[in-house]
Structures are given as C-alpha cells and as structure tokens.
Length: 343
Image 1 (cartoon, rainbow, N blue to C red):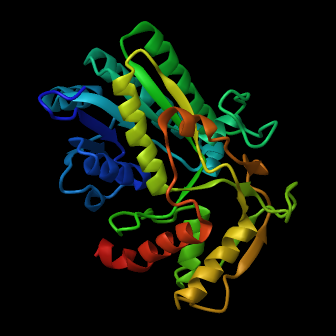
Image 2 (cartoon, rainbow, N blue to C red; image 1 turned 60 degrees about the vertical axis):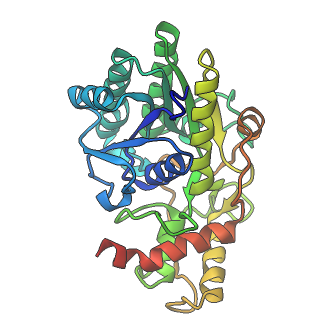
C-alpha cells in the first residue's frame, strides 16, 4: 500500500534487458520508485532510465540482494533475470537450471527473509510444451519439452510452495512471443545475436543480416511454418503494472496468467509483414528478405497461442498494440537507430 501518498518501491531484476527495461519504464510512468539489479551479461546500462536506481550485481548474490532490499525499502520484486534461448537450453541445460532455477531460489529466499510481501515472476508459454489444445489455458497440463521451460516451471512451483508457507503473494506471467519496441523510442530489443524472429527479420530487412532461417516447414500448420502468439512488449509491460497493483490490493491472493493476444501468426506471415513494413517505410536493403529453409530446432512445438481471457477479466488488461504490422514497425524503427544508441 502507498505510504504517505508514496507508492511502494519495486526491485526489478534484469531491468537492463529487453522486457525488463520496458517494465521499468511502465513502473516509472505509473509513479513507482524503481530499483534495477542487473549483471549486464545480456543487458545494457544505457537501457536503464535515469529515474531508476541501478545496482550492478547478480541475483544469485544473496547478501547483495538482501542489502539492496534493505537499503531501498523494497516492497515488491519483479523478476526477469535469467536465460531465455530454447535451443541453447537443450545443449547447455545446466546453465539454465543455474541461471533460472537456482538463482531464482536465492532471490526468493532473500525476498522472504527480508519480508518483501509481493513477487512477480517472468515465466513462459514453454511450460506447456506441446499443448493438447489451442488456445492454451492456464490450467492446461504443464509438460515442457525443453530445459528452458522446465527451469521456469520449477520456479513457478517454488513460488507456490513459498507463498503457502510465508506471508508473500505472487503473480506468474506466462509470456508468449514478445516483440516490438517502446512506441516512443525509449527502449527496444538490443541483444546482439538475438534469436527472436521479428528482431532477426528486421535486421535482415535493414541489411544487417544476409538471410533469415526458417526452422521447420513441415509443421502441422496452415503453411507448414511454426505459429506463435506475438505480444507487443509495451502491452506486456503494462500487464506487470496491473499485476503489481492487484497483489498490493489483494495480499491474500496469488495469480497465474497467460500473456498473449489469443491469435497467432506463422513464421511466413511474420516475414511477409516485415517485407511489407520495409517497403512502406522505404527501408528496403534488397527486394525481400532472403528466406533459408532449415530443419526444425530441438524443443520447438508447432504452435503456441494463448487463452488470455483470465488476465483481461481479473486485471482489466486491455492491449493497445495488437497489430502485427505495428509490432514490426516499432521493432524496425528501434533497429534502424540501434547502432547510434550503442554509440
């Protein structure tokens, strides 16, 4: 609850990264004092807004996290820090269990020991594995098919157990495919060698890549390429603010929500959108993106689409950017100016 008219201070782990930096912006815009802790392995110091306090460190460093919580009077943790590349998790699973599961255990321990009452966790649709039905509902079976999904599901389970034993409530947000950039140009996807399709495709459209690999053309989908539910990163950031407000208002309740739009696009449709936006904005490096057909990647389901009715009903979440070409346009605008920002 706000004290003396001041909103509670929030600790954002991984706040120098892609989704984390957008959520920091959303929290600041909503009036929440915000502290960011990030080891800058994949994040960028310049991505953290000046209005936020920055702490350079690792969430596995429990004394540092505990000191940060105490020094800044933290009342809520929003946890993004971790590793996110599905194929990498298959070849290096221990990295994912260390960064996503063991480190999260240390963070949760620090939060509980310090008396932090609210916790929001950045989870993933990968916990569902290959879903039995589409769109997938929060109560559907959790059967992850890769270490990334399993590492995230373990943290979900830890949170549920901890909340049953301690005065902490939590919200798990299961992301579908996050894309786009802040429409005001304040942040975007900046990771070098990123694997996100829209990021990769906008790089190709701007001449930064020679081609885009299409991993799998024989899926049981309309055009044979994988289908995903693409959610604009700013809509996702807004969901975190609403989740925080729900936890504060209802301290005895915890939540788990899908974060997606409830409809999907295939890889081919996304690449068509990038070609279309590149033409409309006169940013064409060649004629169209060169598409190279590749075998399926390990751990990739044919389709993942969210049933997002629960978050809309319970939190009043109303997406503002549910349009593929708009998502692509924001991503391309960011990508076109990224080199200058990196300086």
